Amino acid sequence: MEKGILTVHSGGNSGPAIHSVSDDVPWIFTVAASYTDRRIVDKILLGDGSILVGNSVIAFPSSAAEMPLVYGKEVTHTCSESDATSPDVTAPGVEILAAFSPLGSPSGLSYDKRHAKYTIMSGTSMACPHVNAAATFVKSFHPNWSPSAVKSALMTTAKEMNAGLNRDAEFAYGSGHIDPLKATDPGLLYEMFLDDYRNIWCHMPTSIGTFTNGSASCPLKTSHKQLNYPSMAVQVETKSAFEITFPRTVTNVGPPRSTYTVSVTGSQDLRISVEPNTLAFTSVNEKMSFSVTVRGRIKSPFTVKSVSLIWTDSIHHVRSPLVVYTLNSTSVGEAPPTSSRFCSVTLILLVIVLLY
Image (cartoon, rainbow, N blue to C red):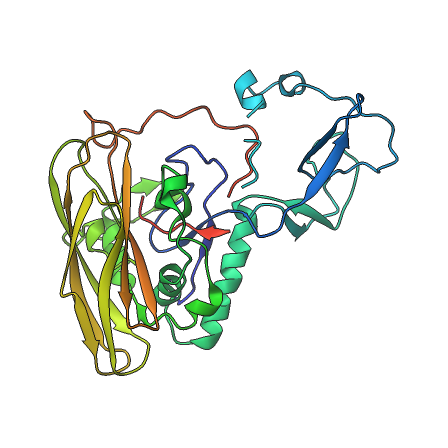
């Protein structure tokens, strides 16, 4: 990041269990996976003449002899009965035609001796290259933009998803589906710089895996909510009234004379105020600051409430998700109970972008 390089990182395939993103530091671009607008459909003819239609790629020739139909738990030694029969989800990174090494088999099984130059694959490793290409596309229009500027452009122009369809809301899919063309003209940018990240890094544990933050003396600790991130997220205590303010600064990269007004859409359980609620720019690259205050009370543990904060000049719509969530009602910070990890998961091409 210090050298001007944006790192795009797969979020991992352990979903839909919560708290399962593999990495979430703010100086990288973490990516989840979702459906595309295409489906791969096959038919299976059963012995009684019935036909099952579903999403799959049949690796066997159509003229093959009869194949056995087995129950999931009969062909696994590592999954429980419930895991062996559950993940049957087809959720885009899903069903992506990708280059594949002929040195390995498409299934990864030791007895599979097939070789292929391409295969259909799913997961965040399939979504990540799409975001990488989108970031490169945006950078080609704006060679001088910083990594955080490119990231902001892709986040604030992403297509909003329906939080009502996923209880983890933005923690599952981030800002939404990337729109590379819109990201070339985002209107406003949320920029962050090396010192901003260093303040976060400096106050992380001394050693995280194989990484270390060294022994440099730390400045005063910066709260995550003070980081000039394109999204906003905060954990609150269950049943307790809260009032939290997020300071933000945006840079005008649209027309020199631009006036933006703010609106908020989403959960009615949160009371949102923005000061000021109008930003009047007179030049390109001019910066203006505002603060977002959220008030309310969440009565239930393990709850996610989200709204969208949108700045618009009638041409650009600069959207930031704002998420307030609770964990255990008696121990803030304790992870909620989850089902066991799925043995076979097809995840959902989007950008995961919140500080979790």
